[in-house]
Image (cartoon, rainbow, N blue to C red; front, side, top):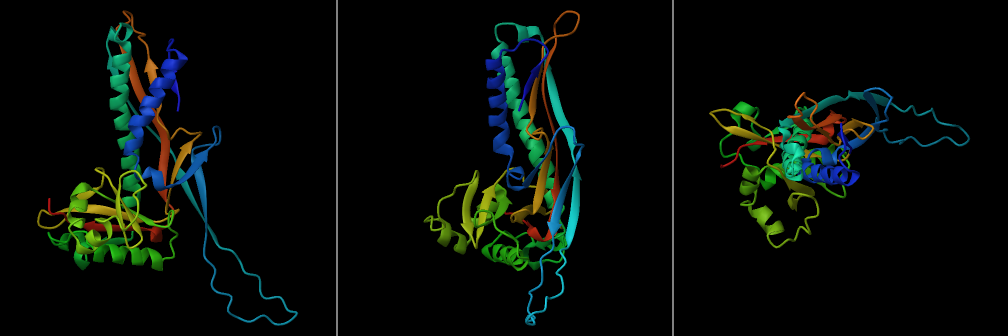
Length: 301
């Protein structure tokens, strides 16, 4: 994180605004938190490489005494991801140079920090939501046939968790992760199995940001930034993303995935207009299609 200015903002002020931007950005970073992090050092281009090794079959043939078996070859797949830059800024009048300077920068930093966090989260979300492993609510065959009452239920959760387990996907701190929105969670909390496990907190303490409970080995994180889409008969489908460890990656260059705050003092002829903005250089990439299940369900509200 860095604050850049064309004229003097004291080091203390710069650190304060950096911290403020981070604090406002972080609450929005739901999806980016769980991706495999990859940093490209400065001066090493825009593309990161991920190496994925295929699992080996059981060595079930007994060895012959004194004879080496055939060499077992490792199969590796290389996946690449190229970063892109995102950012925005706002301009303010010469009030920035008046006594209210701190309030103006603070207010703008808070608003831009929210935007930066939402931007990063949305881009990562859209990448992993485009995965090929889709489960339609109520056993439907397509988005168009999901019923209006096909809510996220304990049976849907059990099915998604089973898929990840059968695909031998590793867990994150002992659990898979699912990100759902408040409309979906409201319906889920009416499910009898959910209530039996979570109302008395039998599922254990909620330790992750936004975590609302656990069921069938899955931690549920609530976010207002869940992707939605049109289903059949004017139904809105909610993309509930279930995933495990190393299912997708998040790449930046020399730490630039964290938004940088840029404050520019006036440079026009009358010193009237200043700018405050942010930028980030990053991308996201699915590393294992089998490690992501997009459960598309309806919601009651």
